[in-house]
Image 1 (cartoon, rainbow, N blue to C red):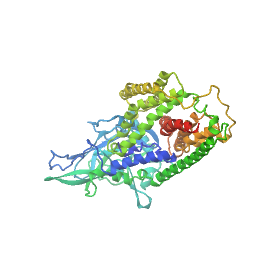
Image 2: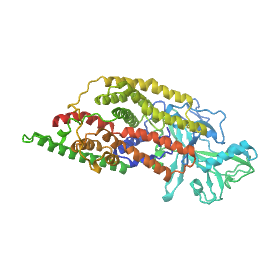
Image 3: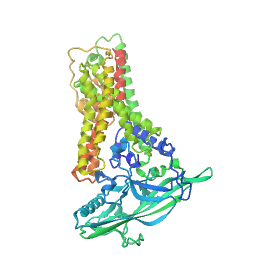
Image 4: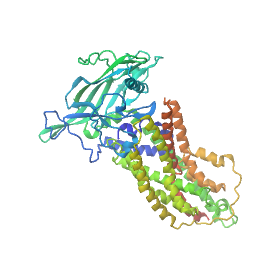
Amino acid sequence: MSIRCFCMGTYPWSLWPTLSGLRGLLVLGLILGLQTASSNAFYLPGLAPVNFCEVNGKTNYCQSSVELYVNRLDSVESVLPYEYNTFDFCHDFKKQSPSENLGQVLFGERITSSPYEFSFNKSETCVKVCMKSYDTAKEDQKKKLDFLKKGIQLNYQHHWIIDNMPVVWCRDINGGNKYCTTGFPVGCFVPQSGESSDACFMHPEFNKTNTYYIFNHVDITITYHSENEVDWYVSKLVSARLEPKSYKHVDENHLTCNGTPMEIPGDYTDKLNIIYTYSVKFEENKQIRWGSRWDYILESMSHTSIQWFSILNSFVIVLFLTGMVAMIILRTLHKDIIRYNQEDIQKDYGWKLVHADVFRPPRLGMLLSILLGQGTQVLIMTFITLFLACLGFLSPANRGALMTCSVVLWVLMGASAGYVSAKVYKSFRGLKWKTNFFLTALLCPGVVFVDIFIMNLILWIEGSSSAISFGTLVGILALWFGISVPLTFLGAYVGSFQKFDYPVGTNQIPRHIPHQDFIRRPLFSIIIGGVLPLVVFLSNYFYSKQHLDYHWWWRAFLTSSFTAVYFFAYAVYYFFAKLKITDIASIILYFGYTMIMVLIFFLFTGKHRITFCVFWILQRDLEIAVI
């Protein structure tokens, strides 16, 4: 999976720093995994280096041609990605595509071969690739030109690949630093107002209003590292960079790759020829080893650097708040236990007033048990994925591995969802365990599948490369109903027939709950508590007993999961403040994908499965110690 993929494309993952301390730990684990995979040269079997040599070398042991592959094009101003061949660029008529795994298909990666092919260590200058002609009088050619101009206006980005490495475009920014990205624009557009943006801002010659400038030339620099193996030298590619340029080639038989830029007026109504060219050179670098060749990509991209201060800050806040809440609770428990043990106190006090109501089943207990079961499935999937990433098994060189691993783990963790859901539901004295099983297996996954299916219809209509094929949808359904559902049934069966008894009984008549102040009411505590989801479970559980409100189940779950609402609020803010999406299809897709992530985050943070389940068990011992 490329760097762009593990950053999730153009989606606003910058909203993650606004979340709670647990988020900081998760992000830290993922980043450390990526750093392990790149910086420590951990490559899996099957990702062995490719040896290159010149044409007159030992071609039986090495490869003399360097192939360039192209991936989909995407934009921050549109959620709709397109395949390379959707645009009228130079195409490779052989169209050889490497095999794609499930993660690549779900991410919408469409890697295919290109007509750009080089001989190793053979520099070339201003080589013609192809020429595209447009006659606006012909409807089909006019549509192709208009689609190309639309791609330029929406700032669509190329993503090229050489030897499984993304080709990086680096440009100078303020302070003499370089900013590198794994994509480069199709071109740039100067609107009628004359306010240049994007790539046009960096080129003073791009100054005509209502004009499109297309990057029809690239200067490619490929760096290699040579090693001596027995009695001959082999080379391995360690970096690939390019610089896009725009040239108006007058004569295709005498190319110079200099002069005025290639302009396309906004109201152009005549014939137009666009000649695509490239220059390539090879450089040797003895310092960079093949195992650490991803380092230059991570180091040159500012948004992939580890935010150590933010991570440390989140970690310290979590420890401080957890310790503070724990001290308050322990002090309260100590005082209550001492008072209960005093012989002169005969009347009920504190917890004893609600000891026969605290385990009273909550309203909508089946729904709560279902959400807890699904949340357990998501939680285990997340932590195993992070663990594998830390070991280097999800290296960015292994494209699509992250999504593939997540989907497979989610399917295999169906037993945990069924077990937890059935166990909690039985503790609520529920009798419809079969209904509980079916809803656990179908409710949340069904909502996600319907959302994906609706968005996929939009992608099909728009002709986007992210559209999932019918065969892939059938495969996903087969994984769901063929593996996940049976495992969920197995877990539900085991959980439903295990005996479970609370340490105290429940009165038939519920105790009256005293009037609660505004700050003690569920809605207020849920909204405020969602800011700090890690430490609020204990406070909610013991708070409910100290203030004699034994309806603590849903409050404990929703207080933490309300963090997902803040997640959604920031996504809405990011949409209006940072993005420039205007078409209806992209808006629907943006919020459709956002709702999927909100649901997953809601399940994940819904009383942090570990905290909820641990104290759900420990509370039995706590009750015995007090009552």
